[in-house]
Image 1 (cartoon, one colour):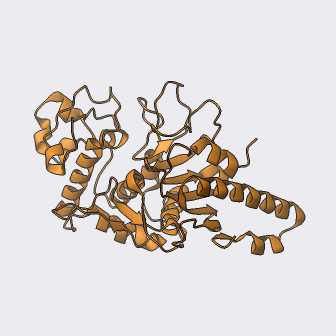
Image 2 (cartoon, helix red, strand yellow):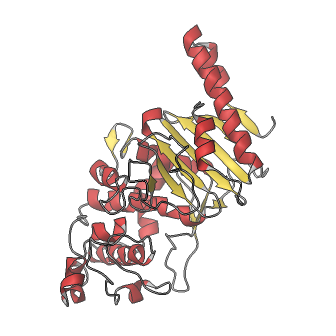
Image 3 (cartoon, helix red, strand yellow):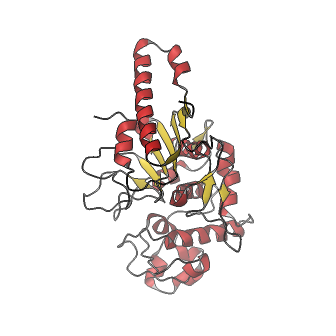
Length: 331
């Protein structure tokens, strides 16, 4: 397989017989998952265990260094921003939005909204159209905060506006994308990341990132390690753990991430994923970043795995449940 690169052979050569069998089984599972991905519009796939790349596959022929757009899965970098700003004492997750925007003290509902609510979708912000950061500051909750879940991007738009304001107040460039690039992504090898920008130069951190699958997997590995890199805490581990927890209203949604934590059967999830179907049995600690096109970042701490998949077009044939079943060689 020209485009597919296995790195298991060198490890297996020095492994005792039981370990070799386990590696061989992993190779078969990973190959089956790669074939499934390639047959369903996959452009690139990287599978890492314990931070070591064990399989790379590039059906689009562009190779490992090509930057590919990841659409709505760009939101996987929201936890990087949260973890870095909490670590640098630039924000607290449970501080009210009104601490940054004083106009949010004008009524009880707005004054009750916290940064955490913006991140986990419980701020009850449901505008009828996409909004800019300035427009998001003028929004009013449509219900009492903490009583309604929505994954409307307006809440994240307002969070990013707050992050810009806090960076500027701290005497730093008011560019969250540049901040995490220097503070988090470059040190772990998640670079370069190209950001689509607005007319006024703001990076689109909701669906505007392009990067290589190797780079994206490096960020997934930092999430798996709960913020620890080279034996030190690079960003706040507590904030990353919060990013990978759901709320009471939506146990399957973290901070721009989808989760497989146990939840009521009628709890909604990412609309184009079968990850929560009755036949799917993914690990309870699986974390997923997802785009409508089929781009995926899977972090599976209990399996010590990180998987970055980039897609040309998933169409209707992509199945998260089947991909994870093949990856883990589940019966």
